[in-house]
Image 1 (spheres, one colour):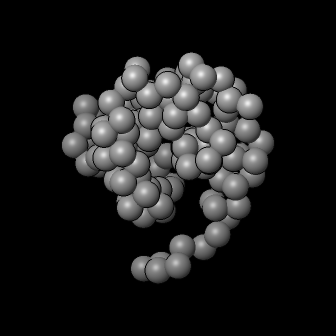
Image 2: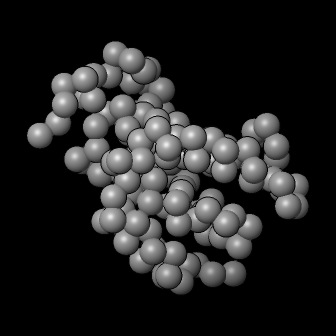
Length: 126
């Protein structure tokens, strides 16, 4: 059973969360697949995605994770992703902070789904 405070959407911008969710649903898999060898935190970010889309996750968890995942997807951020060696450090920082905030909601099922996703071959490999 969910906690009423956890389902309260007044603490964040619901429209922003929906925008972030649309972006993540549209572009997450492609961004992850394109950069899989460059990001050492692929399993964590993928588990976060599965937590964000889990119908059992409270609204504030979805807002935190969709915001962090949208930052990961956005091409223009503090440290551009194309800079070798450090391009994903800001993305990692944002994602790790988000995950630390909602860690009790990222469960074994989310992590297993992440492992399964990462083991699949991309459908349209170049």
